[in-house]
Image (cartoon, rainbow, N blue to C red; front, side, top):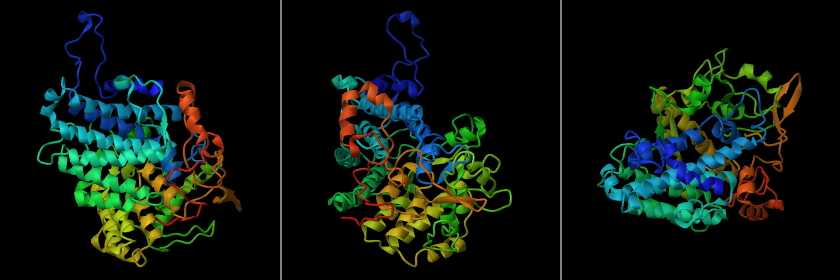
Amino acid sequence: MKNISKYFFASLLAVGAVACTDLDELNESPNDPRVVPSNMVMCGAQKWAMDNIYDVWFSGRQCLNYSQQIGQRNYTEEDRYQVRESVNNNYFKYLYLGLANFQNVITLNTDPATAPNNAIYGANDNQIAAARIMKVWLFNIITDTWGAVPYSEALKLVSDNMVYAKFDDQKDIYADLIKELTEAAAQIKEDEDAFVSGDVIFGGDASKWKKLANSLKCRLAIHLSKVDPNWKTYIAEALADGVMDSNDDAAYFKYASAGSDYCKFYEGFYVDGRNDLTILKPFVDILKGQPDTLNGKSHPWTGVVDPRLKIFTTPNSAGEYNGISYAAPTGTQAKFAGSAPNWYRTQPYILTKEFAVPVMTYAELQFILCEYNNYDPSYYIAGVEASIDYWSNLSGVVVSEVDKQAYIAAVSTKVDAEACAIQKYIDLYANGTEAWTEIRRTGYPEQLIRPGENVGALDGKNIKFSPLNDTKGDIIARVKYPVIESTLNGDAFNNALQKLKDGTNNYYSKMYWDVRKSSYDHPNNL
């Protein structure tokens, strides 16, 4: 934790400030500010978080692999759950550094020495609330990736000289995250700006920040729906206080189309010149209404083609929409690449410079409310329609009203837990962290490939999904703690290990909210 906590001091570096010392006044540059305005810190904090979550590594080679939406064309070690230790170390640090950046916004607006000056960039309370909301969003990603993690003591090096932070249980983390969202929503003054500039997500609109806080509260509540009897109370509270009303309230970070502030997926392909990733067959088959014949799995809407297919990917050289087989061994995987699109040559929306990285969509909220209301079809239909409109409007790929309504009618004949989960999974495209969470929580979609199942066929022989680390026959349940914690925060690290299954740092210990008994178990809500 010492290595994480020290990044609190470095957080201004992450948002573009220049660090300097007071050893010699003559060494100070008048062009390098000592204190960065809070709106600039918020802008940099948002971009830092997006850059380091939705990139070709943390998302591209981890979370989007685990959700089986995007995978690798050649080297499939990460797809097969062999996480690079250096990458794991880095992202654990980077995400905590992101937390420190948002904490700086709070500090600048609470410290009596800096709060008055920063009030000109937006109401102090609103800035604090927005930063608290972003901290919750980021902490939720962290805990749902690794499990129990440093939380209550994680950012206290400066305030309390806390060098070695304990790992908090996920149950306690979730309880405090919900409390934070409730307090942040109450703190917001909707008649004042959150930020006059620098807020890429909402342009400083305090009302939208309030709606996001309550909508995220619904997300966390649905995560807990199988373990916490109060989950419906949390959602009822959020609804009473105000949630997203339409796609206009959707939270996303839209990159710039000019200059170098482009999406990190774009950078991975067109700046770094790599062609490693493409869309996966299990996901495309769901979009095409195609059952998994390799494993004898049916499809709830066989033959129904999703209009979002042409938004999410591009056709291959033969003009067909296909995905690459999932996680065939390196050396074998390349043989499947010919049927998949070459995204380096045919650019989908996700690889554009200005891709809008989703934080939370209005459609996701509708699917949450569908489940909350015992799978009420009205919320489900609203969610499907909102998702198609959201993706169409942002990408510029037109979906006709006729096609949209025909699809909605075809997938709405039976609204149940499976239908709701699959439609939410589709809407969560590019949001691999949340899609992976929902897979672990619900056990859907069943069409995804589990360890030991067939991923493709070559020369009349089936190729099976063989993980490179043990996951007990299921989709990966968590990422192992990084080695850096064992060396720099040993006592807390070892205490955390004792609470994992078998007392080992493994990939199969389930999250607190994951109560499934098997790969295809679909537990009911409490």
